[in-house]
Amino acid sequence: MVSARKSPQQPVLERQTQVREPHLYRVCLLNDDYTPMDYVVRILREFFHKSQEDAERIMMEVHLQGKGTCGIYPFDLAETKVTLVTADARQHQHPLRCTMEKE
Ligand code: TYC
Image 1 (cartoon, helix red, strand yellow):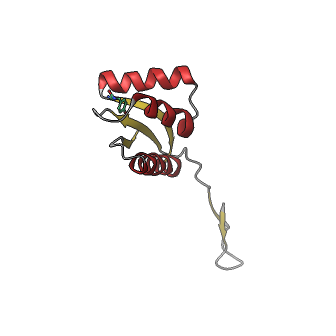
Image 2 (image 1 turned 180 degrees about the vertical axis):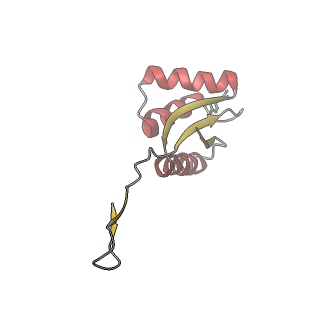
Image 3 (image 1 turned 90 degrees about the vertical axis):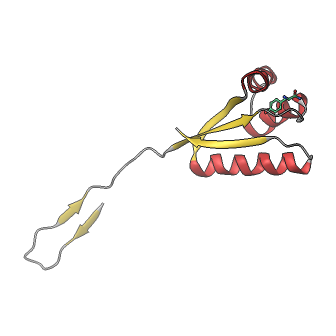
């Protein structure tokens, strides 16, 4: 809340604090022909905290449909996950692509 009084005679002007939900971003994995399936499952477990069962399901969804959702996060968290996953994949010399898109 912001209050302003220009002189003692003027009324107090109050501006309501705006409370807004943060914009959310969907973090996705894309399919390719080279990244090993068990590596993708490890990524989903390690970076997105998925159970073994969910990680295997999401990996197969990406493998069969081309794309799958890892999670939905505020901008900074989504961006960090994309950066960390991409860095890990390159370190292991896999072409895995991880993207984010506004919800
Ligand atoms: N298509 C890959 C394979 O057959 C597996 C894979 C799944 C790759 C998901 C990327 O995001 C991916 N080894």
